[in-house]
Length: 368
Image (tube, rainbow, N blue to C red):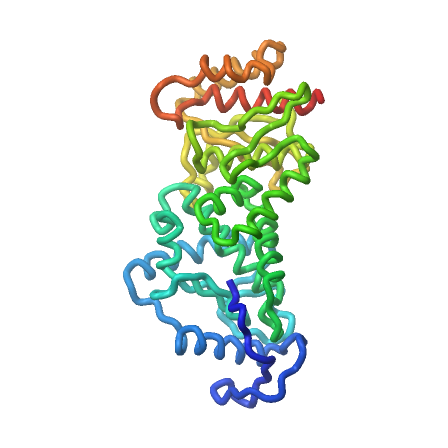
């Protein structure tokens, strides 16, 4: 989040340490040296100098946050560098390693590739510093993607800043996350469900998803996605009881696939959780339901986690897919299938409900 009260435009003198203001200039793009000087000025204004990382929590979180940053940057052609920018437009393709700092309840792009995230801010987003599952990482991805959008969008390369740039950065965050294997609309909804910090802008982004779906889905909340079937029925795309990140993720990912005309029964598949996802973002589950399509980044979109042995999961998948293909498991069976497949106990183990719901919606979509 950039500061919303920025003093007049600045120019760098011979040395950054002797930085001083001169006649304000309109919203022109600063050159590389001016951007560097402006970043130093902003740090002094916000922190009284270069911010520090000294607590154990901030030190431990730094490599994790920088790893998440690198995932985002690698997938979007952004270079992470410690070298000072040399050219005016370096900001479009380069950024410095993000620093986790203490005594800062915010995240901020200072310009010239410098981004700071407060350890207190990460802790406030419902325990994101635990980094114990994919949703902790995804929530952090959204925070970093917003600041990266400010940085590469050049929102701090001129003297003028307004709320329009906040909206651009939030929409930019969706685009940056979209290229990650775990990314998609569901990933954005997970982040907002945890941290609704820009309510009006967050709602605009959510409403844009609904519009893009062409009336096939609505989103009453960030963890509730409703599918509007071809015969007029409306079905909550929830895979566990109540409101949850699992529901936010599944509903958003399904809506994403529907809107991009990628969702069919045959595009759905079940695969083991890739080792890379287990290691990099601690993705939970033994298997995942995916939607395969050339219309999606990376060729597929993750929908939900599944649990159990190979034989158990594949047997359940075969049964649910066969039921839908035979026409005896249409989406109108929603309530009956919920009673049949959702057993008492851990919601995360309801494999067959997750499988059937994905398949039944896909079948209805392709036969509209």
